[in-house]
Image 1 (cartoon, protein in one colour):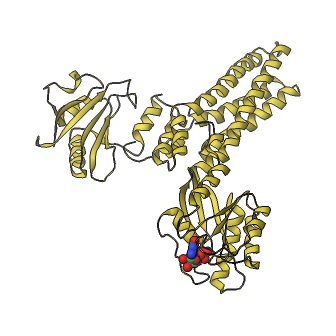
Image 2 (cartoon, protein in one colour):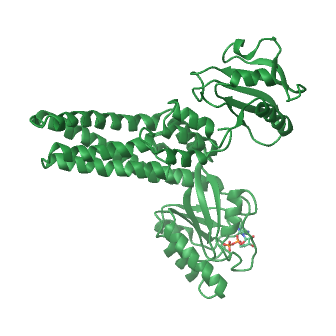
Image 3 (spheres, rainbow, N blue to C red):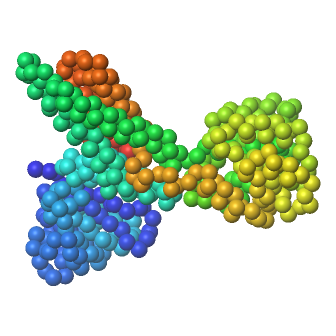
Length: 455
Ligand code: GDP
């Protein structure tokens, strides 16, 4: 018997359509209390998965809205239980009144992520897929959304299942050897097992390696804008963001603190850190800002070096250049292209691969900058949905990888079957946490508490 839960599944802003969602054994009874179908039939007699027009009623039987109702009988529903949706006009007042009516009709307000949690518990999706629902909803770039929808579709789950099944099969054979100690692991079997472990290790290594790429995609490429005061870093940041986030003035050293913004440039999500100008001297507050710039530069994956094209290079520029060169990816933006050029761009192009002429003031060259960034972090490198983006998943994959490596060396050096089996079990345990096959209840609680109500 599953309790019937209800929630508003759409946002809280007035909009065209708002959806009330229900799941549980009492869906039909609840619908009969709050929904009067135009065709006069009770909920249980409505065709499954077909929209029917009717009135949404409050607790007193008064009409609140004209709505469409659709029923998804178990087990062919999102949660695997009886489900229904009431598609109302997207007024927060209507939706609140509708939800109140459902609660009065015996439903319980759904907890955070409870629909998806029920889908997981009822075997409609594994844990990787369930977690991708949040990633899909929260996606900030097309690439993130694509990766999440591929995960939801099972791309990552299939890889994990393949590794899991291979190891499970192997473990089963080992149990046989442990249970019947007179038999030995035959040489042929040993080769096959080594092969299974080698494949599992390769697959896990690929997964773990993909995590850093997946992480960049999810959190944004840590990017620093470096350059001496007044080179135009804040102006460039604002031009990229499309609104005034950092304070821009022509007094050197205005940007005292570091500010962080996420911006999608050329389809790549950048976590931009606008830094205080690199300048020796200055007052104490500014000196602190400069120190933070140095720290940020060390952590960055991409440095955008901003130079003032209307002036020749100075010692301060050289200092910024030396910081920028420490980042794995470097783009040199020669700013103020709208002013007469004094900087020797040819000499710069000899020193650096990516030298672009831009104007934060007019927007000239920003498209080329976006293209250069996209070229440095190509989306094409990713195998859709096979990227781990979640630290919990990466941790489990890492533990599985170590255990598989241990099992492999144990088998290679001729350890007894029970030793290999112990490692194999540890790998299965870790993989089970990844896809939810062996996950602890409290971890499940923690994971689904990250969801919003209605998901
Ligand atoms: P920051 O100290 O490097 O962050 O530099 P700001 O962004 O505060 O800019 C310093 C000054 O240069 C301001 O007066 C900006 O208006 C000006 N500036 C920035 N970019 C350009 C540009 O592309 N062209 C021109 N003409 N002025 C710019």
